Image 1: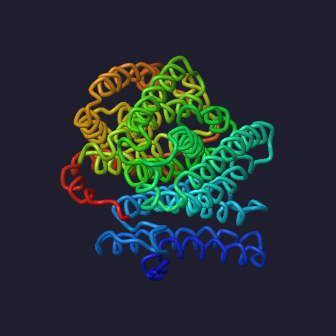
Image 2: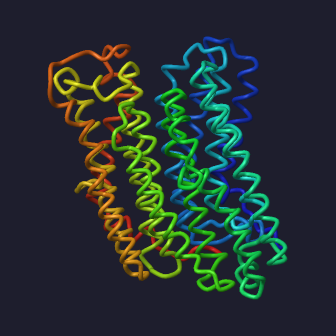
Amino acid sequence: MNVNENPLDLLPEVLLAGSAVTGLLLGSWLPRARQWLVGALAAVACAAGVVAAAVAAGTGPRTAFGDAYALDPVTATCRVVVLVGTLGVLALAVPRLRGHPRETEWYVLLQLAALGTVLLAGAQDLLLVAAAYLLASLPAYVLAGFAKDGPGTEAALKFYVTGALLGALMLGGVTLLLAAGRATGYPVLRAELPSAPAGVVAAGVVGVLAGLLFKAGGVPGHFWVPDAIQGTTGPAAAFLSTVPKLGALAACYRLGSVALPAGTADVPWAALFAVLSAASMTLGNLAAFFQEDVRRLLAYSTVSQVGYLLLPVAAAGRSALAQPALLFYLAAYAVTNLGAFAVVCALPGARRIADHRGLARTRPVLAGALAVCLLGLVGTPPTGVFFGKLQAFGAVIDAGYAWLALLAVANTVASLFYYLRWIAPVFSGPAQDAPGAPSPARTPAGVVAGTAAVLSVALGLVGGPLLDALNGTPAG
């Protein structure tokens, strides 16, 4: 194998890993009052990683470590969005963690989970996919139960049990594909799998997808999502419901477009992704309809969003619109979902929809940000999610799945119901203060919410030029 890595090409990943290790060492010596320096180091590493990723994106698609790691538009976009999302989560977490006895550990775990997510997005070898899955999952389990209270412990336990089960299935799938294709690299699998036994290939792919859908929070790996998001802390919920999905869905796309060409082993892989997309968007919407807990509502919303994000995955290799649609939608979704969770973090005492009644009278900026983000998740113009959904619908129609686009439109219209159930009380009824948040508009969470709302609209307004930049051929 030609080991062709250039350290500068891998600078975003090196910065995250180096910051995590350095922060862990610093935390062992710094006094508790100065543990925030580890968080500042993490923020600097993320910001520097964004710059490095943007610079590396202009050098064209290529691979590192042979063909095991791709450096292409998919990886470049996920690097930037993951690092920006991690920066947002850091801003949400700092006020809550200041002076916490395990403050350093939280920052380190967050960076390691983000690093695993980036590696998932770029992996073109099943062994690297499995390693990235573990790196993205193990720190996330700890983040879910970091508070060590009853709900957090339950969240971490359910998260871990589901992840361990589907992770074992994933490793079994890797083993089967290795047996069928006599390799774990995607380019080799693409050439070998058409002549392999169809049953072995099908079982192997289903096993790998089980693990990836667990990380994405899509059906059938979605069972952990509502309980984990409801039980964990606000910043951890914002991270778990947003950032890991980026790497997992990029990995699904890369698996479908690079390793599994259409017709491999006489199995219609695109149809499998289409069915998973339909199941995720429909079940997520149905479960969200009458939720009263806002975190649980957003949790089921994220399940439905995975269904929409799987639309361009189903069109991978069958439509030129698939890749730019997926990447743009991932960026728009990450910004918009983080904005909604930032409002939840800014109002820690407002756990139910009724607790937000009259919010527009007392905190109009925060109420406006919430309305923009929730309507953005529906796909209301001119937000970024609207433009992303439009491109995703076009991709699946171009790929020959018009029925899936119609189902997605129907689900989008239906989702308006439960988002409006939350928005309506915000702008009606008597004003009331949410406990535990005296002035959220001036807190970091309020700033993140407002910034995310502005970015959500901005992405929708500049969608055309961005789509041109996101197009390109995956490396490999």
